Length: 428
Image (cartoon, rainbow, N blue to C red; front, side, top):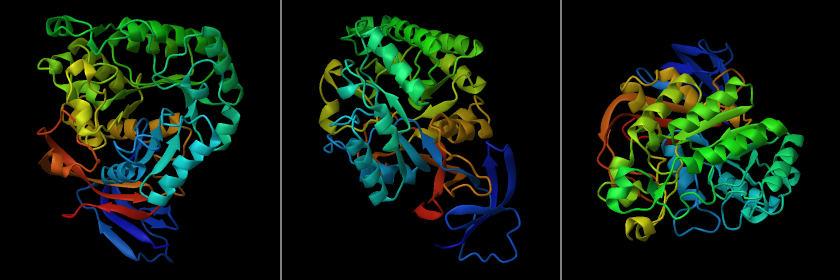
């Protein structure tokens, strides 16, 4: 395997609180040294990184790659390639594929196809219940052995509280993290937008905040009772932030994330029935957005994710309520994060932390670090490049996003996976 040196970049490693201009030397797929190279080291390749940011490869806590079962939307090959082009080296996949990730065979299939693509690591989540139906527990121990890093029922609520408690007990006994997306099965069941003045004016069935907060309150009480380690996925409202903060203050083993688009869009963006803004959880109010931004800055929310959901064009062409929910967001995860830095919401090291070692820690992964001996999963960013998001520039197979035409500054120039260069921007 080739040796490589990255020279003169601003190296940011939040895990070790490193932030200085220095060199990074790589051998055998791992970081050999920072600063001065060992006397017996010779770089077969050098990357001049003067003026660039050198940070760990990004870790995305939620990206649906649509394979197996929905290859007409995207594939593991196309989306891991898109991830690599956007500095993402590790992706966590929810279990709601077809078939569901409730057997070791499906979990192994995902990882084998990611290995064949060799662009990005895939860490699958296992189903909490068989078929995500909420009736019988999945074989979590076998799924963990097959490489699953946690368990989740994705967007399928477990209605039977006894089943949910048993599942949490089971997960706790195997030291598995439960990934929870709180969703009441009845409130806002037929809804497609945040319940408020905008949805009322547009004649759209609303999804109230209580659909999230009531479910979250139940989850937190069961987490407290069972002691299971839990991660709350895709918070969308201010009251949810308060509930999670209160739980953390009581010492519960709870973390949380937010999708990047929730920090830039609100329910006002659906005013013209823009189906690209049809997502779940729905875009909520300006007050909620402000609370989510503050929680990310304060660390109550410790990870920023893409919540990538590519769709074929036809899925977004029906009337708003009948369109598929979700955005293609691998191409905007880092650019939107850098916008938060421009707007003074986060410092650059804090943003890098929320995109690298903190989500990696939630997954129990050693990714997201630049310490000596770590795998050389590395992202290089040129912070000076201004650009606009255009459909032709997107690396994902699909372009279902409301951010087309938005101006950004800063882009990925190189991505390394275990020391192998998997992406280089042409102008770099």
